[in-house]
Image 1 (cartoon, rainbow, N blue to C red):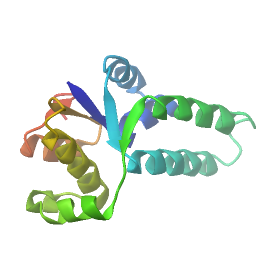
Image 2: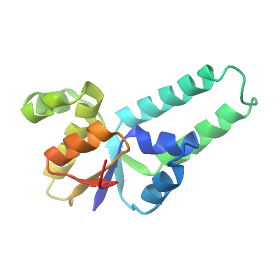
Image 3: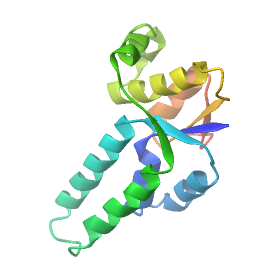
Length: 147
């Protein structure tokens, strides 16, 4: 099984949200992790936005420590680039129209990976309920199973 990650699980761990233990269990239980390069962008921006909203709540090392931990997580993922070829693939997939743009990019990346005969089944790992619902409609397994 290949597991596809969006930003919600990583951010739950990094920001020490209530569901961080479940997120960490999901992360650690998956050997092959894939995502779109969009994950790198989303997580970095989300981390910076969170930090900036805290208005001095954290000491000066908090952000650098979180960025280092994020870098470690991202180092475990096989990334797919967003290219013209990928955009054409997305444009031909009408089933993505129900999704927000970023969710559609993630799910299209997973669909494209699943089309590769060298890959096994893809499971979508996310805490985003809309993403999990759309993933199930597209025939993916999800983790967690029930959004």
